[in-house]
Image 1 (tube, rainbow, N blue to C red):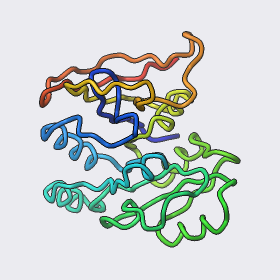
Image 2: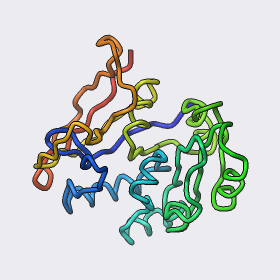
Image 3: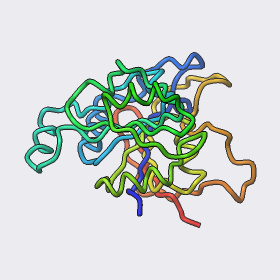
Length: 226
């Protein structure tokens, strides 16, 4: 058993999520920010890869006091569990994700993570060790389900997202497409990683919903299962 896994990303009209310098840019507007805050509040946990933590230092907290109050009234923590997939234990001990907002944190590392880093992170978060060189995502999701996570939101980065698709662990993709062109052969895309080589291996999607939002479009896709 594993949680329902949905991926939420914002990208430019040419499929980029930031500049070639990996500088964070504002792609969506206030309507989409409110939408994202709502789906965060509706999730049991939010997961990102270590690259996102090092580049953006996100807190992954629910911003709206009303949404936080709704969670508390329902007997939940103010914020969903924050999770970092971090094979080598590189999450900085002072990262915002470990300190901003009340609630639980989990760092998932592989057995290759140095012991001293794991011990330092364990002072701020639960540490799950799975996989030899990289985090075993299937085992991690099974562990999260055991801990009560039923709805898991993934916010990046590209390597983590592609690996979820590669391993058949993604259920839905929510994509906000902004009204801009960023360009750049080296600018990151929503799903980087190694990429699929054969067309028969491509992850296939089915449109659930298309909505005009801010000055762009929101597309919701379900992931077809082979």
